[in-house]
Amino acid sequence: MTDGHTGGRVGGHGDRRILHLGLGNFHRAHQALYTEDAGRFGDPWTITGVAGSTRGVVAALRRQRMRYSVVTLGPGQTDVRVVGSITDAFVAADEPGRTTDEIADPATRVVSLTVTEKGYGISARSRGLDLDAPGIRHDLAGGPPRSTVGRLAAGLLRRCRTSAAPVTLLSCDNLTANGTTLAGLLRDFAGAMPARDGAELLGFLDDAVTCPDTMVDRIVPATTGEHRRLAAEAGFHDDVPVPAEPFTMWVMRDSFAAGRPAWQEAGAVLTDRVQDYETVKVRLLNGTHSLLACLGLLTGHDLIADAAADPVIARAAARLGDEYEATLVLPDGFDVAAYRRQLGERFANRRLAHATAQVAADGSLKLAQRVPDAALWHMRRGRLPATLALTVAAWLKCLAHPDRLPGGGGRAPADPNAARLRALGERAAGGGTPARRGRDLALLCLQEEALLGRELGERTEFVTAVGELLAELERGGVPAAVEATSGSGPSAGGHGGGGPAVPSGGP
Ligand SMILES: NC(=O)c1ccc[n+]([C@@H]2O[C@H](COP(=O)([O-])OP(=O)(O)OC[C@H]3O[C@@H](n4cnc5c(N)ncnc54)[C@H](O)[C@@H]3O)[C@@H](O)[C@H]2O)c1
Ligand SMILES: O=P(O)(O)OC[C@@H](O)[C@@H](O)[C@H](O)[C@H](O)CO
Image (cartoon, rainbow, N blue to C red; front, side, top):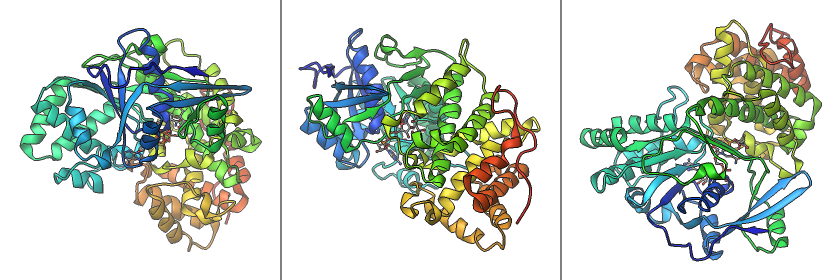
């Protein structure tokens, strides 16, 4: 066990602070480690972690003198490291006003975020801020802020009116162009605020706030008793250890308004080409992860490693990799073949026990990041990306008919749109044949509700393909649906793209 905690740091160095919103597992296995390592090279920075409303992690950290462990699990390798870079933590809901105070405090120089895709309040239809989302409406009405964007806006406005000190907002979530997207959402929010406040916030955003794009990569599953056992075995009784794979990567644009830790010394890559890295990762890793998770759930696999080892699912994943790879602008010198090989090994890491239900969760938000742009890229070139259509069909099948999943509805992934998707599934269930039911469900979800955006919903060929694959899933399960996409292009050799995609028709 290695102990990175330096005694006496707690409460010190208050003038170089990161305020982190979203004290989940990922931050604690990624940015917190880079920050601690960077502190050995440059000025040490500390992190104040903010949990939205759940108290468990904050309470445990306090009990443990703000220390926790990261349990790295590789094939044949276990490493337990105690981390101490998070020196304070609180629950936003329990301390109303504190998040605003902390964002306004000039000692806070970076506000970083891992609040999940759904934490940003993005509208699937417009891809801007969903001004009708209850949390956003509440915050615009002037109550103590509850949404992430509302909290940031309140804190920034206070900062602007007090010190006006510059600050960086650093999104570390799996969103396409995450920093640029966050800046746009804040502008949308400012545009809907009372005019004077909105104008002031917009001016501050222009003058004193940067939102660098980042690409973050490390597979970090949920904690189980096994991780507590491994930490204890290494000598640290930890209620909130974080499991992680050995691989880690962080790429960001070096655009920090008020300084940053020496993250490059800890292995982070600073570049202006972040979006290229990010697109590679969000498509090849996260997009393939979504397919493995949904086909895995439909087949009865609880773990990503089992789905990845299933030859039928592996075939689909390889084809999806080809479809994604064709769309990519690769960073200079990036070896995509090696990256894909390594991804295969990472997905196969059984020791991680990464649950298919966890990766498939919130699919309605995640797929919006992972599917439409790549699918539209192909269709603008006259090709139908059949395996991207299969990703959507598999996700719809899991959510529209959760009770039919092997093992029952208890295995259905959580999703903020779960009830809506179930209701759409029921509406489509009346069609007389699998073909009719599949077509109706695809039309309802993608065209009428535009769950993956208007532009994709208007692509009749894509919606039709999704409907036909839903019918195949109903008739012959995952093997039939994967087989139906087999004419869609080479499974090796990359830039092949599609051909005729899925068979049409049959009852
Ligand atoms: N876990 C990974 O492997 C991994 C890897 C790369 C990036 N990420 C990014 O980090 C995010 C969080 O992953 P995690 O492993 O920490 O998950 P987690 O379940 O451990 O934690 C989720 C965090 O998000 C917050 N949150 C959830 N819904 C929210 C909402 N509506 N508004 C505000 N905050 C909300 C929770 O309070 C919690 O702090 C992912 O969604 C992804 O964008 C995760
Ligand atoms: O974290 P999410 O919820 O966006 O997606 C689930 C996984 O695909 C994701 O967590 C990966 O493990 C991670 O992005 C690897 O860097």
